[in-house]
Image (tube, rainbow, N blue to C red; front, side, top):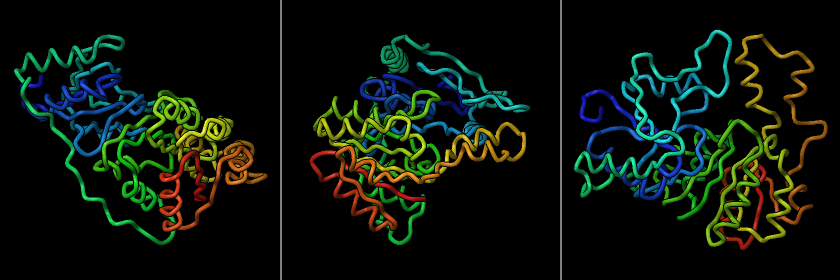
Length: 323
């Protein structure tokens, strides 16, 4: 498959997404022009300048189908064939085109690194350098009013080397991975299933495991309320976590899934369940009440200032971004 002229991709999971597994995949990509992909539910992804580039399949089914439309051969390394998170009436859950041939090199639970190393040997690529992400020049830091693209670019400007990014910004953070592709090397931890509220406790776990590294936690007001007690743990343990709460005052991802059912606009009761209000959440006071310094920002300049202070602090901080 890799020696053919067809558009081919390796869909990587688990240990294939970091360390020696990712280096082996990078050698294969360099020699064969195969793309390296990751499912949207990703446990850990090593990325940044000097690391093989892996593209994450988008969450939205329409975007994922468009993303995969030209792939004619898909080689699975620990991953399942890509399907949408949820089933929608009248729509296929399969995200790959009908003519795409799918082959499992390593099934879930098998030795992904060993499978990739064996493939490298079969192709005679032991001395081949991996295809690495170029070091991008840091973009100019944007200013002015808050926009989603401006927030993403600001994070791309300021992300520290060797940071751990915990990402549950399902709606507001979709541009952040693209904006940080050429940032200094870092690890990306994502939502591993369809549950809500993983970001704050996952950030606690990452900071406990790696106390010398800065953890950036990206969450939203809705998902954050599922596990807000993790903020108290951050304070109690003095963890180096900078938490950004994108406060859009709604369960936007649930609104999107409701719309996918094709049953029309939500009625008053359903619409009320999507709303986060009555009363409006105050994340700055919530954080301070649990011992974490917090601030609310209303401009990109203030966001950049708060991010710098958070990354330089010795302990946890929280930034609320009203949207």
